[in-house]
Image 1: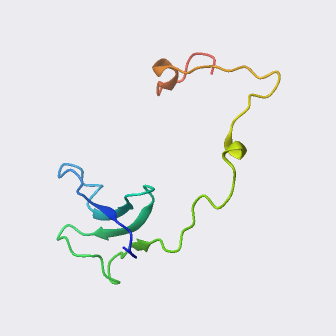
Image 2: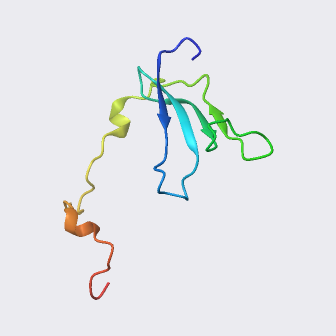
Image 3: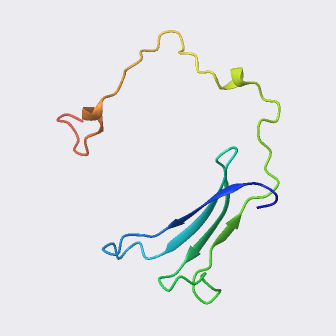
Length: 99
């Protein structure tokens, strides 16, 4: 795509899942893993047309690493803050008593 080497992934939802009926095809830049293009297909594997829902996304002229130093993104724990390491038990779907 536009002279870039890309991985092309075809994604097909499981047949048992009726809510996910669209198939998709995506292009991922091999160098930086950015999404370059995405297309949605119906169950007959045709690109959606204007009568249905047509979704086609293409990314062009993207610029990465435009001079922002990595130090801007380094996280420093603020004075007085406490760090808590979360475990699997912290992600239960049911709220704890008193929450």
